[in-house]
Length: 266
Ligand SMILES: N[C@@H](CCC(=O)N[C@@H](CS)C(=O)NCC(=O)O)C(=O)O
Image (cartoon, rainbow, N blue to C red; front, side, top):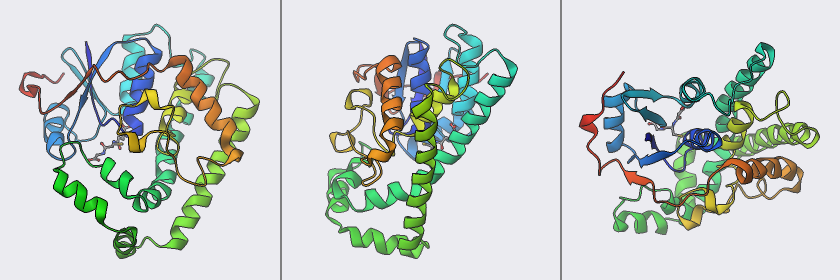
């Protein structure tokens, strides 16, 4: 069975899960512990970021490389159009979404996490000792504000970032209000990428992600709930309803529990 080394709450890992579900491929999720677990990831894939897919003896890192690999190896339900022009448009959209959506969401998300103690501790790895979780939980938001100001993050920067993200969502909203797919006349990698990368701006319906309850049905306040972008989020959630398999948690293990030394790199 395919194995996906992942962080559950990662938009790039979600992109791969959405592609796997769209293609109807079975896979096992292996949750990686941030930091210590990534040492093993480096050993098996030559880099430390997730997602990493293992298919037999083949190891593929990077969500774009994984998408291309899956479409080559499992061509049923293609995600890349056969028409060369539409295919190029699709790859340009994918590249744009990978680079821009996460970048534009980063500061607004940090700002929102900073102000919510429950969210802060929910985002810590599950192995974090309770004593540390409780400590982080008990720190007031001002402490994080102060830490942020030390690295040059201030209110003006955050409000610029919010405006920037709003502009992007408005453009996506306008496009997707008038047509069902970003390129061509069927669902492609472009749609799956944009849909998946938006999960941290507003989480998809709760059944699809195996995350702490504090992170479910949440989003950046003032953006996720703004009616101006609801056509976009409705479009995104329809993709989830149509293609994403609800998470049962059954096929998830932790990378501390498996023997990674048996993995070979192609
Ligand atoms: N270009 C990569 C980006 C992957 C990425 O940024 N992964 C993040 C998780 S969302 C990560 O592994 N961060 C941990 C780190 O950089 O050490 C892709 O598309 O897969």
